[in-house]
Image 1 (cartoon, rainbow, N blue to C red):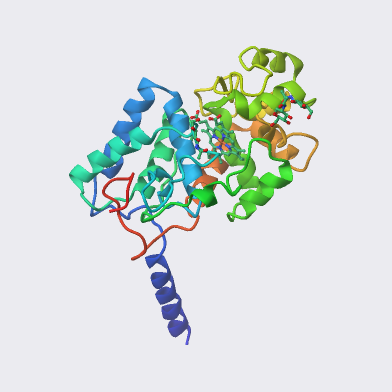
Image 2: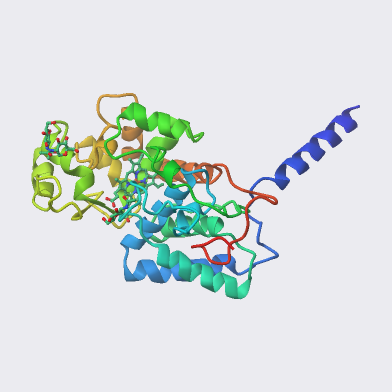
Length: 316
Ligand code: HEM
Ligand SMILES: *[C@@H]1O[C@H](CO)[C@@H](O)[C@H](O)[C@H]1NC(C)=O
Ligand SMILES: *[C@@H]1O[C@H](CO)[C@@H](O)[C@H](O)[C@H]1NC(C)=O
Ligand SMILES: *[C@@H]1O[C@H](CO)[C@@H](O)[C@H](O)[C@H]1NC(C)=O
């Protein structure tokens, strides 16, 4: 009896894992995949450290719109509009050329094997590691979508920088991510830059902001709507190119750049998490790695769904 039950459990596990992602997915079919990706990411980040941030953000914007399926990378076609020009990404998400370069090299060594969605997942991990963050074992086996969804990308699934805390919590919960996941993933803003248009209201109109921080940010972000919208500032004042925990220390000092950053520490229910991550780099790194794996699990296409695109910018 016990043997039969055990056997059934093993069979169930086996059939389940067919549709699941796993880190050995390309072990036989593309053994040098990790090496090739890392080399290109390394070169891109060495040339411009901000690119590490941009590549990490690509994965977030891909996963939050209909799952981690590479849809973000598709250009407009006669039959659909891509997601690149949707509000949260237009003139802001960058790094597409680096993904093209990686895909080109990967196609040379293992043509038709590795999805663009998986390349985004590996690239995000490598970027974080290169900037001093944690590593993690990337789960693979996602396939690529054949279409993109401009309307979905504009529907608010990617939260706005003006979000309230409740808004953030709900947006992440809708993706199967907890409040803790949301707080720790927001720590990605320990690297990279934001445009004036995304933080103007915060630096001119909010009261929970350090006055000298607001003053210094105003210098490169004029008050008038539409003027200097594209001027950028570091999301983390202290160490914008290091994947450390200074993002959380900044929040304690009311120096969050975006409204959606500072709401995490504003006499609310997530204050204690912010304090914990500001104290412990280890806890931040550990939880960030876990949450990235979880984010990478959002609605992947597997099995015979989707395709392996030859060019990340268009369906085959
Ligand atoms: C919690 C909700 C989030 C909001 C409201 C948000 C919003 C933003 C905004 C407005 C920018 C600046 C874009 C620009 O001005 O061009 C930005 C940048 C960035 N975001 Fe987020 N974000 C969120 C979560 C995340 C997550 C989960 C990640 C990754 C795990 C992430 C990674 C980044 C990175 C790395 C940058 C800098 C990109 C660069 O310099 O190119 N963000 N985010
Ligand atoms: C994207 O930005 C460009 C340049 O600012 C603008 O011309 C275009 O209308 C925007 N696209 C959408 C769909 O809003
Ligand atoms: C600040 O808020 C007021 C009132 O809502 C608004 O009229 C003004 O344009 C805002 N200023 C900025 C820089 O966002
Ligand atoms: C500037 O933009 C803010 C935020 O979108 C808005 O609340 C405000 O009314 C605008 N101010 C003017 C003068 O148009």
